[in-house]
Image: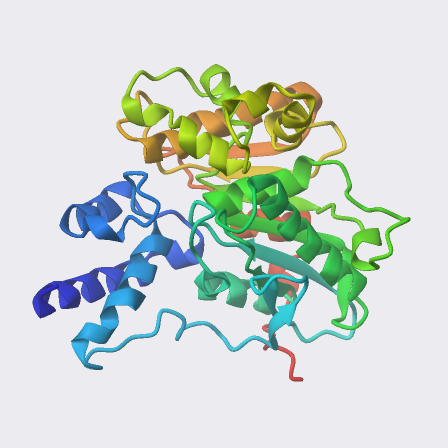
Length: 365
C-alpha cells in the first residue's frame, strides 16, 4: 500500500475517533462506506459493510508501514483500567478489563461487548467517553473479549459473555460492585449478545462444581446499537424479510455459525434446541429488563448483507415483541429525533441520578 494511502486511512480513523462513534452514537454508514471503497481489504468479515472495529483493526495492521511516523494507538484515549486482562474463563480470549469508580458503597456496573461479526474486534474498542460518563456518575465499567467463530460456535460464544457476567457477580464484593445493578451494551455483534443476555433465562446452575456458573447471568438493562433480533438464522426470512440477492443467504456460513456439519443438522432435535437457544425475539418475556435499540442503517430493501445484518427491522421486531409482553423498550432509527442516548438510558435504568453525582476517577489498586 502507498504511504499516502496509509496516511489518508489514519486521517479518516482519527476523524471518526473524534466523532459520535466513541460517544456510543453510531457513525453514518456512508462515512465508513467511503473508506470501504478505497480500502476493500479492510472488510474483515467480507459482509460488504465496514464497521468501526474493522477500520481500526485495519489501521493497526497497516500502521507499521509508516515506519513509525504518525503512529497512533487506537487505545491511547482510553483511561487506564483499574484491573486489566482479568481471566474469567479457560480460553485465552476469556479476559476483561475493569474501571472501578471510587465509592464507599457498592457501585453499579456497565458492561461493553465489542462488535466484529464474531470474527474480530477487541475489548479495547470501548468508548472513552462512555467510560468517563460512567465513572463521573459513580458507575464502574467493564469491557470483555470472547472467543471468535473459528474457535467456538455462536451458542458457546454467547455463553462466554454470560460467564463474564457471572464471574464479576461472583467477585462483586472484591471489586465493590452491586451485583443487582449490572447493564450491558454494544454495537453489532455486541448488541445482539447484550440482547441475548437480557432475554435469555437465567443460566445459573446451583449444582455446578464451578462457582462462577452458580451465579446469575441476568442483567438489569441493555443497550443495542445496530443489533440483531435473533441468531436463529432460519428466522431471518420470516422476521426481517425475504431477499433474493445472492448475499442474502449464505448456507455454508450459516452452518459454520453453529459449527454444524451440514444443513441437515438444522432439522435434528439437538439442532432445533440450539436454534431456539440463540433466538432473542422468541425468548422475550414480561420479566425481562428495559431495552434501548438504535439503528443507523436506512429502512427499505438492503443492498448488501451488512445492511441486512444491521437492518432497522431487527429493532422493530424486538419493539413489537416487547410491546406485546409489557417489556420497556425504546427504539431510535436512522432519522429519529431526538437521537437515542444509550448510556443515559442505561444509567437511568440502573437508578443513577447523574446530575447529583460528583465526578469520580478510576479507583486505585
